[in-house]
Length: 114
Length: 113
Image (cartoon, rainbow over all chains, first blue to last red; front, side):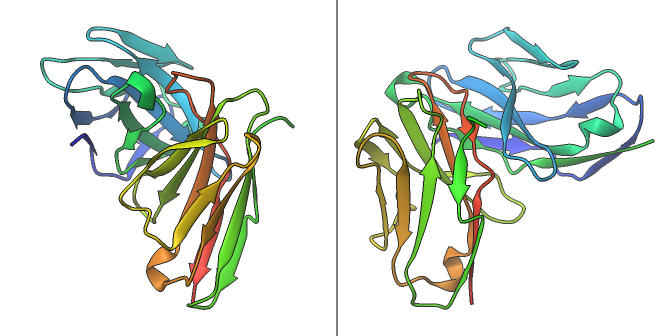
């Protein structure tokens, strides 16, 4: 079956530091890949997505590239802010008629200090 | 606010009692999903609807769980004879067709004593 593995957290950084959160996946076929973010006291929201190999998703300064050869979708940001403190979830869907049936990783807690 | 809303936000119950959660999706969204999230884990898919039809149920959804979306608008998730292992955050999400962009509510937290 499908699975997603994220780097273990939590991750603690100083403001303006570089961020990488690793994500690898196992899936049959050609999944679409997502990063969702959950800010304190809010629901999960989509951060970025990529639907095919070598696609780069980007949003709010975050980027992730769909690497089929390494089955990875690592999240990066060049300079984090305190407001980026949240829980980040990598996810995939096999697509087709079950497009919204997402398989999530366990989440990575990010804390950014001033 | 036109986001996904869930009610109640927190429910504390005794083992063996029945509980029901309600979800109101974004009005123009055809699809509605239920997920369950336990502490330190990512959400796990439970079931989803397209309009009023329940199209898929996870093996996680035991016979004690039932979900409905009677008019293709709001949905309810009922858990009968609750067990301590049912304690979790129950998340509802909605989306347009054929997209992985789900809009999540803030969740309903269930605590079974």
